[in-house]
Structures are given as structure tokens and as C-alpha cells.
Image 1: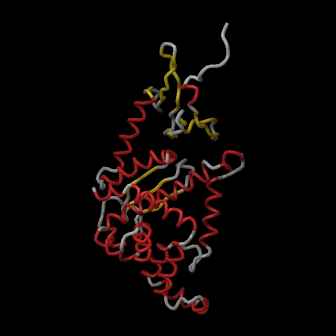
Image 2: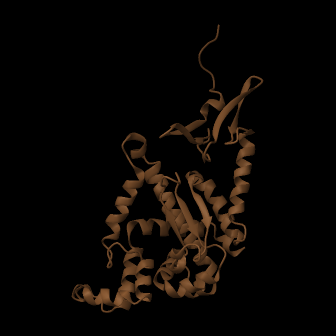
Image 3: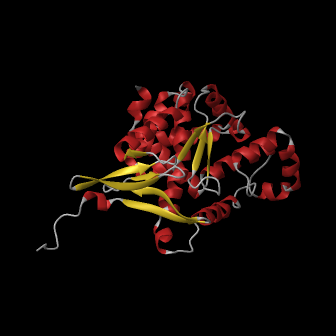
Amino acid sequence: MKIPGGPVPEWQLFEPQIKKTETGIEETGVITPDGQYFPFDHGESIAFIREGNQRKPVIKLSDGTEVSFEAWKIRRREDLKKLFEGADPKYGELYLRLLEDFPELEQLSVKAGTKEQYPTLEFTGGFWKRPDSQNPNPKIIVEMENQAHYQDLLRDREESAREAAALLGISFEELLKNPEILGKFIFLHEIGHAQDYLANFQNGEKAKNDPNFDPVSENLDKRKEEMVTLPVPGENPVGVKKMYKEGRLTSYFEKYKEYYLSKGITSPEDLVKKHELAYRNLPSEKYADQFAADVLKKYWSILVS
């Protein structure tokens, strides 16, 4: 006679994650017995095959082949390393450490880019994108190969660079001598935005308990509420800097000059500066800045090795 009880087999502790699609149910990833999350590429799923008296997890790939879960994880890490080929290897080293500290970042897509490919990068080092119909996970795009880009940003985005130096506990002069530090800070800042979204929206308590909760809309609405409080409502510093470069900010300032003077903003140049400072103080920006600073200080030895 079998008696109930005893340890639960490990394979039963794997938690496949699913979502409804227009064509049915799709597996999006799996949470392992130790709580780590691993996202699936489209068409991948998990299965358990019998080996003697046990069952072992395998991943069914989109082409129908099967690989052991451990082999699949190794392949994923190798694919991650390829993302950073051509870049300073410290980007990859930092990211692999982050995956240990923040398992939810397995859901993040990372891509290297240039300002030629992404014009937004002209006055910034990176940006993040919320999930959409084409990409079910958040994504960051960061300049990781051209270090001269960060020398330019130290001039073009000086207020933000000074804020980064202060958060790291170093002088602005040290940042000027080591622009690669700014590159890593921006890389981690964008990851901070994605981590905020994953932890507090996509994987948050409300998402788990409210079937009608839309994490993308909720996050976007919160961001819009912040952005309308800026000196140039709704514009990020990249947009304001572009307006200034193209000469459009002068006419914009003149149109609302009385309002800006009442706020202590005396010129288009002053508007660029005050807008940058206000942006840095938005709650979502402060979250990402602090995330980047905390990670860099924890792994400072990677930067100086």
C-alpha cells in the first residue's frame, strides 16, 4: 500500500509560463525549482522525459528537435555572449552578473546599436522599449562599441553626466578621463528601466491577481503623467536637444517666454539645462539612475580590472 507524502519530485517543481494568443496557448518560458525564470523563443516549450525512475526536463525547439535543459541553458549563455561581440567585454561581464542578481532580466532583449542605425542615439547612449505585438519582452538598445560617442555625451549631456558621477561618488573630472564609465552607467540605466517594468508591472502583484491588468498600458500611463510635468511637456532631453540644434527651441521659448521667465528660465540655453535637470528627477529616471549606480558600485572591480 502506498502512503501519501514524501518529497515532491524536482521535475514537478518546474512552472511553465503560458499566455493566450489569437491562435491558442503559447509557452513563454519556465520558472525553475530555484526560482529562476528562462524565457522561450517563439515555438519553444518544455517537456519531461522518463529516465529510469525519474523524469528529466528537455526543451523542444521550434524545429522539433529536443535538447536537455542544461544544454539549452548553456546555449542561451553562449548566444548572450555573442550579443557583446565587438563591444567592450565588460558589458557582457556586467550583464551576466546581473542575471544572477535579477533573474527576471532573462526576459530582457539586449541589442547593440549606433546612431546611424537609431537616430535617437545621437544625444544619448541607449534607450529601452516596452513589449509590443512583435516583441513580447522589453528591449534595450545601447551604443557599446564606439567609446568616442561617450566623450561627445560628456559635452552634450553634461548635466546628466555630472549627476551620474555624483551618484557613483566620483568627480566629473574622473568621468571625463574615463568616458567608458559613462557608457556602462547608461547601459545599466536602461536595464534599470526594464527591470522596473518587469518587477513592478509585468511580474508585479497586480499582474498576477488582476486578469484585466495591462502592464504596458499601466507603465506607459505612469510615464506620460511624469513627462507632462517637464519644462517642455512630453519631451525627453534628446528631443529638446534636437530642437535646440535645429533652431526650433528659440521660437518655442519666445512663444512661451512669459511663462518660462516666471519659472526662472531665462533663455533657450537655460531651458535645455533646466529641462535636463527636471528629467533626471522624474521618479522613473531616479529609479533607473539608482539601479545603475548600485550595480556599478557593487561590481566596480570589473570596471577597473
